[in-house]
Amino acid sequence: MNMGRAHWLYLAPALLLLGVFLVYPSVETIRLSFYGPRSDTFVGFQNYIQAFTSRPMLIAFRNNLLWLVVFTLFTVGMGLVLAVLLDRVRYEAIIKSVIFLPMAISYVAAGVIWRFVYAFRPVVAPQIGLLNAIVVALGGQPVGWLIERPWINNLALIAVGVWVWTGFCMVVLSAAYKGIPKEMQEAARIDGANEWQVFRHVTIPFLKSTLAVVTTTMIVFVLKVFDIVYMMTNGAYDTDVIANRMYNEMFQFNNYGLASAIAVVLFLAIIPFLVINIRRFRTQEAVR
Amino acid sequence: MKATRILKRLPLHLLIITLAVIWLAPSLGLLVSSFRPRQDLLSSGWWTALVTPSYWSKFTLANYREVLTQQGMGRAFLNSFIITVPTTLLTLAIAALAAYALAWMNFRGRQFLLMMVIGLIVIPLQMTLIPVLRMFNVLKLSGSFPGIWLAHAGYGLPLMIYLLRNFFGALPRELFESAFIDGATPFRAFVKLVLPLSVPVLASAGIFQFLWVWNDLLVALVYLGGFEEVAPLTLKLSLLVGSRGQDWHLLTAAAFISMIVPMIVFLSLQRYFVRGILAGAVKG
Image (cartoon, rainbow over the protein chains, first blue to last red):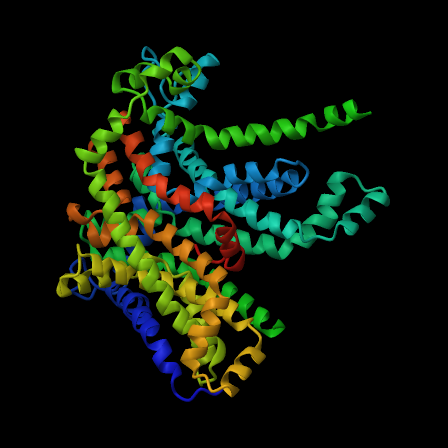
């Protein structure tokens, strides 16, 4: 529709804010990543060399990778299982609300909630943390869930993320699951397929594109994960992640060059998913 | 026959209910503990208090009184509203205007702008923190409400423009054509036609932004950190964890205070929230 040149009036406020808060700063951050801690001396690729070789960063990379695999597998997997199972019970709505509710809570509050679940006290004191109380009741020794490196504490942090995000996966996958024509599953059953075969050969292929969307959303979240780690351990005991390293290089060590380089590394890791989103949008537009 | 059917489905029910209990127990523990005196909280688990009816008379609001008045959570509660409500309205207004132009106006570069908006949805905030903070320091905007309103609006715009533009674009073309034949200007069509028809999507997008801003820690930490008088609940709570990390009677009450508003918004408007998620499951 032709509406003259008025479109720029409608776009101007948005373009101004996007330019000032997203586009310009991103370009500036790339520039700063080639400069020293105070952004006054050019250092070439030195910040990047440090970002890829220093021990704290290597640990952060390892942890982000662990998050990527475990977190994505559990959120998407449990979301899928819940979407399928809850479709078969009458109290679906209430359980969905329970699983989905953590999405409404801040990571800060979730951090407090789970620090309390993981609370750890010496053997002689009564355990006030739910998890250690269970361990002790079963005859075990109390565990320092956020201290035991490298697996227990990282998995304990990932569990918090899973608690928050499974509801999201469940809701999106459940909506798609309900869109599968029931006749297709019935036809497979009549042909003698068991429930697993129906799931494997009818449900999964049908949900493929939704699974892809949910999985990419989880991966983009995981790459940027910050609040949970910042709140619960601040990276202590080898639990650091890339985004938290960036924050600490920026505010604790005032190394703006290295912090910028870490941000750029994060950005580079996300670019494939940015491309995927734009591609998906293009196919949607072509369909319209 | 019926009995065997129930028996066959028993594992299914057990599995679902177990998962629901696992999901609920952590929050329940927080809630119960927030009403317990410090001494009790440290000497027995919250579950023992829950299953001992004779104990229930000892539940108290003292922890809430202390965090609200002495630990500054009252002020932070107010700050969270002062930050969240204007930000949400500002973002909605700016995004709606832009989405309208991107959906219904023909101009060169429209496709490019759309791609840019979609690309910006996933940009890590970390890419922007240092330059924006420097800019804010020069303009004296760090530690101020207008500064964080604008920053949150900028960060929230891409997803919101995307959501609104998809909805606006799906409105029927005839609607506009008849309005323009009747002599309506594009702006009049926007106010009188598009906005009233788009209440559901405006609600979804508004709830998204409200919850996002209310629950945000990183943006507040960077642009408001060190200015306690403007700190929102999330920032205040994170400071409390740092300074009073073992005072569970205070932390539980403070955490619950920070959760009340988003939980009410979520439970009463869940329908719109889900719709928003299904329409734009791309933001990280």
